[in-house]
Length: 570
Image 1: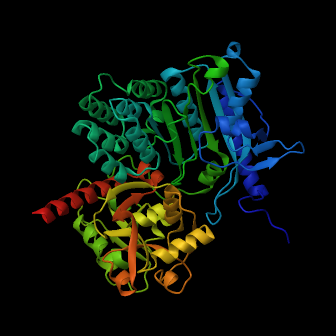
Image 2 (image 1 turned 45 degrees about the vertical axis):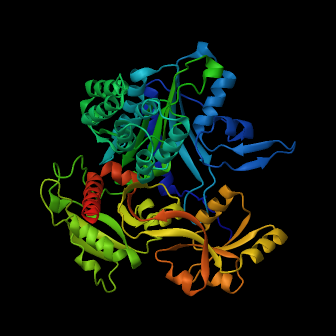
Image 3 (image 1 turned 180 degrees about the horizontal axis):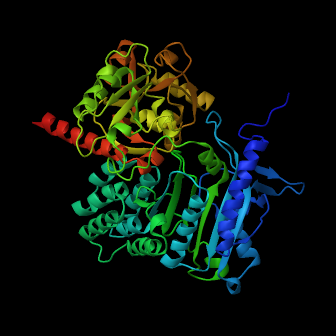
C-alpha cells in the first residue's frame, strides 16, 4: 500500500473539523480589523524565492517544460511581498491583507518535521511605528483569546537595541560575528568573543548581557541602562514602551500576556524593529511568529515603506487546542503557583564521563542529584530543589540520556533544558539557547593520523583528490575541512574511531581527546586542532521564554561556575 512522502500527511475528518474552527475564528478576528483576503500561487520563480527570502528554509525546486527554475512557496510573506511589488502601488496604501495557505519546505531526514504546513497570516503595509506594531500584537492576542486557549503568551523583542549597540564603534567583522552568534542563540561563544575583543568593558558587557534580558516593563529599563553605560545617548526601547502602553490602554487583560525577551532577535537581515512570537498550551514551539520588516518594499513603494506581518501555524494552533495544558502559567517562579503544585522542571543530564561533575554542579546549586549516583534501571530521577526560598525551582525530573542525545531531547520538548559538551551541541545543530559554560569535562577536538604516515597520506590525497576521515562528528569535521579548502570524504563511525586509519579505512580521524593517552597507545599523532570543548548548560528556547525556572537554573549554574573558577585560581 502506498504511503504519503516523508513530511507530508493526510488530515482526517476529526482534525479537519478542528482546523476549520481555528481558521474561521482567526479569519473572523482579522475581518473585524479590516484585513482582506489575498491568494498567491503555490509556485514562484526561483528568482522571487531567493530575492525575498530571509530564512534558511530551503524550498522545493523544479523545472517547467520551458526549463525555467521554479520553487514551491516556502513562506507566504515572500509571495505577498512579490504580489504587492508586482500588482500594487503607493496609491493602494495602507494595505491590510490576510491569507490562509500551505507552504512547503525541505527538512532534514530523521527529524520527523513536517514539510508541508498551513499559515494563517496577515500583513499590514503602509503604516509604521508603534501604532501599527500595537495593531499586529493586539490581533494576535485577540485571536488566541477567541480560540479559548487555557494558557498562552506573547513574547516580543526588537532588533533595534542590539543594532544600536553594534553601531557604537564595533568593528564590522566583529559585529557580523556577534550577530551570527546571537542568531545561533550561542551566548557562551558570544561571551568569549566580547571578552577577547579590545572593546571598552561597558560595551563588552552590553554585548553579552543584552540577549539575556527578559521580563516585563523593567526589562526595558535594563536595556536602556546597558546601552547608556556603553555610550548610547538615546533610548532604543521607545517603540516597545509605547507598544506596551497602547496595548494596556486598549485591553489590559490581553496586555498582561505580553512579555519581553531579547534572545528573540532572529532574522536580523530581514526584521527592522519588532519581533514577536506566540506560545500556547505548553507547546515548546511557537504557534505563531512575525515582526516589522520596513524597507523590504522600498523599491516598489518608495523609500521607507513600512510593513509588518504575523503568521500562525494552523497545525500548532490545532495541537494547542487538542492538548490539555499540564503546566499552570508562571510569570515568575512562585507568585501564582505553590511550589508543590508546579509541574517538574525536566533537565536532560548526561551519563558517561560528564556524569560525576554534573552531579557536583547540580548539588552545589541546591538540586538533590543523589539518585544519579546509582540509578539502576531508572531513566528518570524524580527529585526537588533542596534550596527552597523565594526563588525555589520546586520539583525536578532528571532525564538520563547520552550526551550526544541531550540536544535532541531538549530541542524536541522531551526536556526543558540540559547539559552536554559543546561538541554534541555543534554536531546536533538544533535550535537551542546555549546559556552557561560549566567549565568541566574539558577536552580538545583534534585531527590525527598514524605516526610517520604524513607523506603517504599526502601522496594518497594527490592521487585520489580527497582525504578519507573517520569520525563520530560528520557535521563538525565536514565544516572544518570545507573552511580549510580540503576535499574530505567523511566516514561516520560510532566507536573505536582510532581503528579507522589503523586498518586502512581512513587516512585520519577527527575526534575529541582529554589526555591524548588513547592516541599515544595507538601510535596516532595530532595533525590539527579544531577547538576546545567543555560542558554547557542549554535550554529549549520556548521553555526558557515561558518558564522562569530555566533562567533561574542558568543564573545559579553561572554563579557556581564563577565561584569554582575563583577557588581554583587561589
